[in-house]
Length: 269
Image 1 (tube, helix red, strand yellow):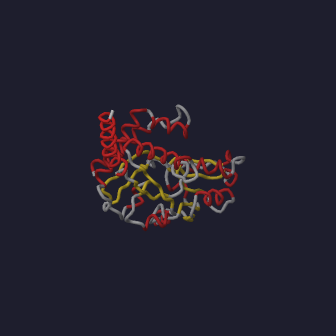
Image 2: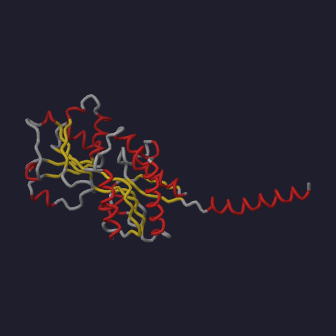
Image 3: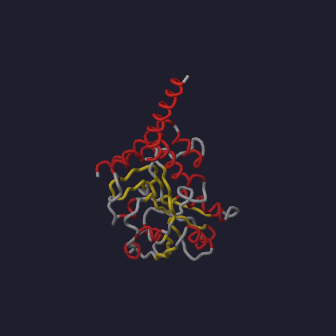
């Protein structure tokens, strides 16, 4: 009996020896982002669509990812943090790893009752003389728009842009397409059909995990996130997340092609 008791104690100690370090080593990785629902939002389950993807990857690789939400202007000045979003915004910061986990499209939105006819867009010349609303800090140098005769009015949020659009303070606004739909239906659900949009050719951009160059083991961590992404794509968990937001069978047809394109581009760099 005593011998059996000793054996159980030894087994228990061995379990604790191997289990405690594994639990203690579980890393908490902090990222910064702006409120950009339905992709990123503290007010949506698991931080929104891209947030769900990030957390699914994190669970797969045994890491806890936390997102802090701060305004765009502050994010652009914070050049030592990890970020999620579009890496083009952080051209002044160096990263040890950039991992594309999703993609987004940008569109121009306008309010039909404020225009005598539909706007047909083939290039910037088609909106010459218009006042264009943008999210402050997203475009950087806008002199090329001024040269085209397009007035630019920055705003601090998509809500502000949509209200200005409806009340005629701006003619158009540039927003992430899915975010535009989400916000318009949230703010003006009974008037949503009066808002129109047109796609901007070549506007597909990556949504990424960016690990700052100074972050410990950043390159290895980036590889882990990348491997975790492949595993949730293979398991079908990734597609299930997308369909929660786009609808079953309504994921953009070129989604995975665009995702792979950005992954290959980043691998080359």
